[in-house]
Length: 292
Image (cartoon, rainbow, N blue to C red; front, top):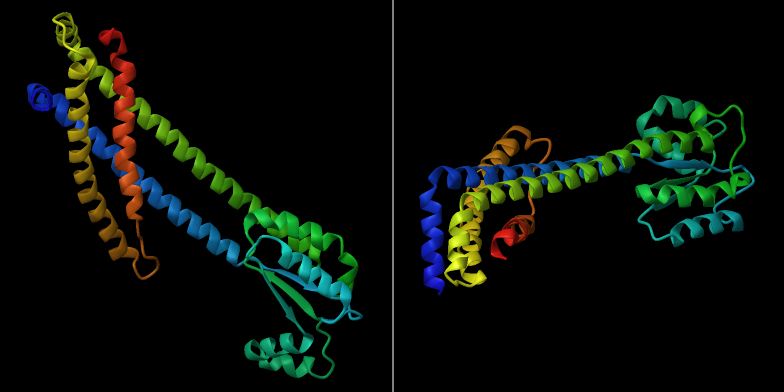
């Protein structure tokens, strides 16, 4: 039975060479495009994470509060209790002065006379989904922050958060857009594969009908097409690996000094399984009318 199925599969492949080659070609292009899309998604997410890592919230405390103040320790504790990787760092006015000394030694000579800098709580490495929760915690304790009107415009917490919120909204839209593109592309792949298979079924419909009339089982009729698609998928997968490896090597050759492009191997395995499964499902729905 298996040898007969294999024989008819090879026969189907060789009988219409153009249809077989075009199917493998379409599959190869789809796999390459999926890999490129996954690669772009990975790069985009790393870019988003890099931009997000540069966003920090600086809370300039009023002079009457210090690191040992109960209200300040409660604020820090509440932020750290969130299920987040946010980094909370308390900097005294002396710490900040030392940092400025490394960057602007001449400016420090002026500030040293009477250090006007406030103690500061710096929040960094905040996940996009956590900004809202952290903002609620801080807004309930705005009385801890300095209200000195002489401070820089960006020292005001509300202004800081508004600027950060504008950036995070754009990053969230970008993430959502990437997910929508992936979904649309997967639906398009399923549609294209279904169309290719429908053309196959239409081409072999008379043979399927005759085979059914002489009493052969559905498994014998369906088996060669399943094996045929597995062969197509395997050939397309190997071609995809070859083409995509060339693309990765060229990208790393051009941009390796800035960014190293890598691709998770498990995605390739999932990709192969996904194509075989979509093919099987498409064959099932396309051939039902002829197998009844």
